[in-house]
Length: 336
Image 1 (cartoon, rainbow, N blue to C red):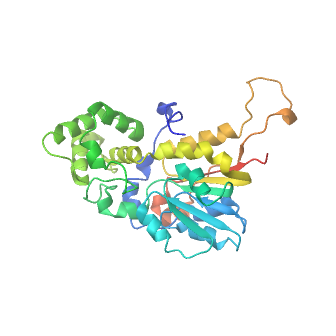
Image 2 (spheres, rainbow, N blue to C red):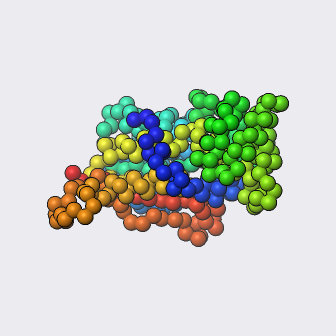
Image 3 (cartoon, rainbow, N blue to C red):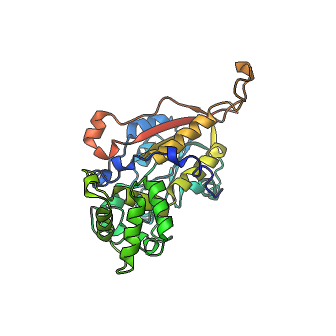
């Protein structure tokens, strides 16, 4: 289902700490192709050799390849990725247990139907931007490299950041920067961009970074680049990242078998808060407050939470700085 009912609820409480990872993290994640929380994610999936699993964010296959090692003759891994290049790389993976599709995990139910699959034994998401996307200047995700302002995960569709920035209204731009980036200087930055584009089209990451740096007072510049939140906000908006997550959460119960696991790794609190709220809501019986009811009579829930949220160990963070703001949450589909 399209729309944004979840996204419209309580934006002020959806605090984003994406700046801890993706742009502090843009630099840290470059050239780092190590899957984050790999062992923990694979263990959380509780893989059965003959099970069917979904990797909704294939990337370069770090998690997928570990899943495949645990599958037997009857097992299947269905991978999905928005990025056409990721799909090209995935098709190089020769395995009878593996299929990959170009698309978004928000359409997982439709993609599974294409191959005659109705239910699966687990779903894994590793959210955010992949290292190859960050490392390629032409993709426009990182202000650390000068390149064209693209920022699309799916390079075959949608507006580029350049096209969007050169036509969006000042009011809408300020709203996007505030909502998706929690940028306190959203209005100043929006004014700066709208004024600058009347003189020269904004077409490169360097131009955008410099405009943001000039708009934010120097006393608020820190180790973190001032453009961090602006790049984050534009990327999330253009790629419908939160909408896709909302759509996946809205349909995942209908595709998971009883006992199947939902495993999600997020890198900023906008995503993590959505996942946490979903798990809490779906793992608690829907009964009125203070209603006296016996435990045995409580209505069944769709999910149960499995353990506490998992963060990377100090050793993993040292090996792979991109992991430092990662958060893994696990839920299990209850047996009807």
